Figure (cartoon, rainbow, N blue to C red):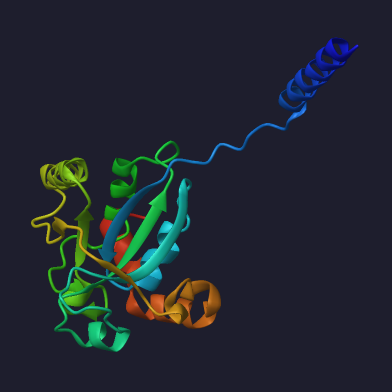
Length: 205
């Protein structure tokens, strides 16, 4: 009797285990993620642009490339900290590749300006590609060389340098284009960003 009971319990456990596996819902596969960091003038605009890219999971406006720890917007915008206004892009490489992000980046900056971007002047507003490893460096250099070889520009002022500590900007800067759409559009238009991009790249931008 005891043996039959043990056998019955064992069969019941096996059935319950099999049922839980059989009827369990499909597991949600977490997307792979990778990180890219770019500077292209006003980080409000850069964040707004990269948020449109399919495969981009999140973006963060911030400061990087300098020596001052935990810099503030006032410090960076005044110059002298060595930091650049930049945006950190978290993306799914199965949806959008790093070379595709590079192409998108080039078409949303003025690569000829060595003194800032559009209406914003100063080192803190220069265009920069920050590479995280040797592969990103190689791809960035290759994309820059292709731009040079195209003969479209007399010079390419965009820097390609190693990534360093990225400091997120103050919360009110994050997704500024959503929080203050009227002010953002007013700034972007008066800064001449889209007008200059159309002049450089054409209306497809």
